[in-house]
Length: 148
Image (tube, rainbow, N blue to C red; front, side, top):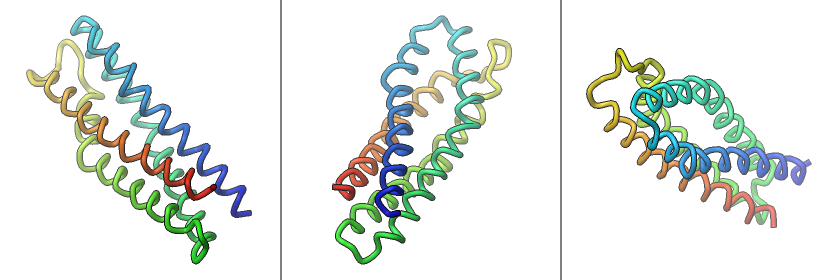
C-alpha cells in the first residue's frame, strides 16, 4: 500500500512540477513577447484557467504526501517525505500570500481596464513563481529520494 501511494504521490507531484516549470520556462516568456493587448488577454485567461486547477492539484499533492508520511512514519524513508511535505506547505503558503492576490487581479485584466502597473505585477508574480517552482522541485526530489 505504501509503495503504491508513494508512486502515485511522485507522479502527481512530478506532473505538477512539470506544469509549473513549463509556465515559468516557456509560457511566461512567450506571453512577455506578445503585444500588450494580447499579453493582457493571455495573462487574464491563464489566471482564470490555472487559478481553478492548480489549487486542487497543490492540495491533492499535499494530501497524498501527508498520507504517505503517515504510512511511512518511523521507517527509513519517512524523513524525506516529511521534509517534502513541509516544502509543499511552504509552496501553498507562498501561493496564498504572494501569488494568488496578483493572480486574482490578473483574472480581470483587459486592454480597457488594466492597472497602470500591470507589467510590474506580472513581473513580481513571475519572480515569486520561480521561487515556488524551486520549492516544489525540491519537494519532488525529496519524495523521489524517499522512494529509493
